[in-house]
Image 1 (cartoon, helix red, strand yellow):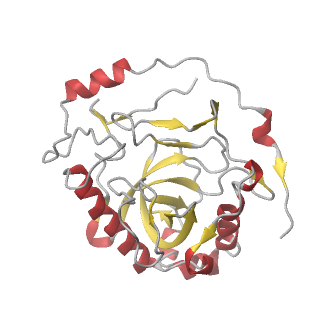
Image 2: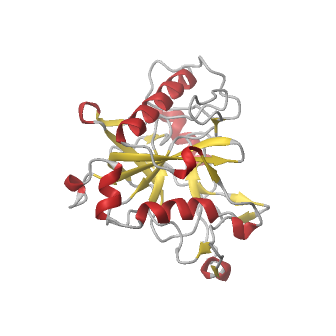
Image 3: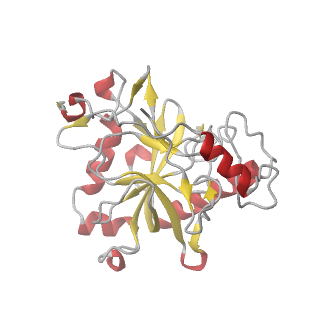
Length: 275
């Protein structure tokens, strides 16, 4: 069973986590909203379903099986709260001037390094610290490093070098994780732009803002949506906006929750490699 996890506001309105949650929590201070897809230490590869109406969170399926990321020693599951920035889009029709690769057709990814283990679907406010440019099968797949503003240590983190200084080994582990996580599935190591070096806060913020502009073109139908579902409940000037009644009908017609499948024993297996 792979149930849909729809996003609902406090007043009972169903919305899209891709299109309806504002990117900015505080634009003047460059504080952004982010949607947590995968809590830290877990393995189930949950993601915003960008091709389905209202874009629920659901577990990725590969060859008919629910997908779990492998544990590549010494890492257990995801090593951050992993998620996405709403109202951003890495346009596959746009070739990035720095990476020389096109976008991966998804919202831009977020790695929260805060101490709290978040919940799936939780919306947090993030202070951006830096960014890593993963090249995944020839596509640019940005990974933004940030920290939950509610973290008790958030005030100490303002740029990528603060992570290197205050959480020694974390950035190296992050590169290691992204390089190797597909290798147990028989795929080659992932590659990076900039020789795997992290870019700083200002570079990261500019990248987020650029992908926000690409999203604006998408949601206003200035760019073809292709296989993406742009249905939304709040973007009033979008041709894809729907009523609250229609949104509720979509949720009501979705598959009902059933008994959860047990996590397979393979999700606890360790994989090892020689550096």
